Image 1 (tube, rainbow, N blue to C red):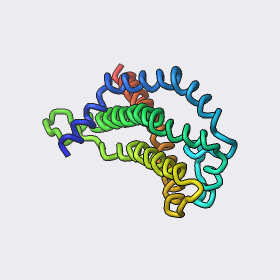
Image 2 (cartoon, rainbow, N blue to C red; image 1 turned 120 degrees about the vertical axis):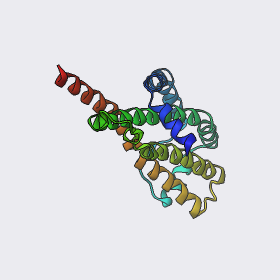
Image 3 (cartoon, rainbow, N blue to C red; image 1 turned 90 degrees about the vertical axis):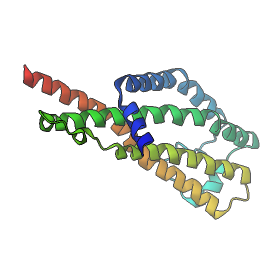
Length: 202
């Protein structure tokens, strides 16, 4: 618990948040466009797994069957090279953004109560909410694992394996969407509240 609390506090520091933003922006500009074009060369129409928002277990074999043998091999390779780096980059960005925004907002909300008091509990912020972006990263990796086994097993894909792929994708987006939304909105809200507080003091 203490180590996770220390990690949460580290992620909430503004230099770490700034670093996470810079790494994410650099990756999005310098790496992601070129890699997306490369992936498009071997991904058949209707064969997307990780960019599909939802698909049923029955559709898994159909999607995998659209790939050539070379395409399936390329898919597996990218899942365990590029798609290990990307979740690390966007995961760092989401976690630090949530930590920075939550810690700042919670501190502003409790600032008046803290006047003249030395109670450290007033400065605690709900770090457990970092579970939301963290779950997005975990389910992204779970999806990659399941679809890798789908590609390796094709055409003999079992229902449990197809279900794992389907659930992995669905759960990934269930947490990644709010994860990215919070990564943008929480620091922005903190900045606006801080600005309003400064103006009110003038």
